[in-house]
Image (cartoon, rainbow, N blue to C red):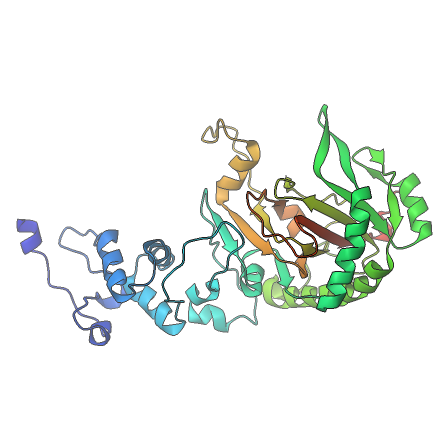
Length: 388
């Protein structure tokens, strides 16, 4: 009690004039007491809760962490770019929505978007950060996204064409160490000419064997391929300008335009069909490969995580699947892929990150695809990496 009574009087900041009756410390940080200790997080949260009663405690705590514990800084961010302050609905089990994370970035960061500036990672150990907006995805992952990429009728035609072919797709079988493994979803490989089809069947090895089911690209896929090429090259140019040092392509990235000449088409039937964390094979794509991926039908979660060095002495993940341990090391990011979206995996993706399609306990059925998701990954097979 004596320590409480003898506590120093706080210096009142200009924010107290805006919020009568609320105490804010000067210099944009909490005032220390005589013992040199910062005021408790509970007091800070109580202060924020009184100012923003409709924002959840979890959101306020996240904001406080991002502001390095400064109540004043949180208030300034909320006032500069007001967070959606309406009462929160209970979280749904399906695909949701959120306000852009740009509201939580400093104003000078937002204004300097035309130049390269590395942002602080927003992932936390053992947590999944869900991203929905194109701005957030480009800022915090090695990807960019275009929603409603195709005209609605064209997207429907493409979806129906591939749904008709999907029952003939096969589950890929490959060897992993000493085990023969089957992929949990079905897929098929398409190339742009009969000549390339013959070459692929006799010259290209995948996981130690030749592919037997290689098809020529369909008319609808070919028409869409041209639009994908234009969009992906525009996204690459934007990525170079805003996210790469000195506004230049990454070392070993192809100096030429990206031209899709092959595509894997994947079919995920139901929420249980998924694919674990992996990087795409670069044998014929070359280093710093770019991939354009169209999602059709059911929306699913595309999760990414940075590749982190393994610590052989770390026993914290004992008893957990290895993929979960690696994902928890630095946290993971979930990108929600709705129908008719184009995701571009940029040049840094395959060597520095891993990606997966996460299992879904509940999915929202699509009016045409039902419980299926069709995914087309357009790729540029570089001639210089032909297996000659």
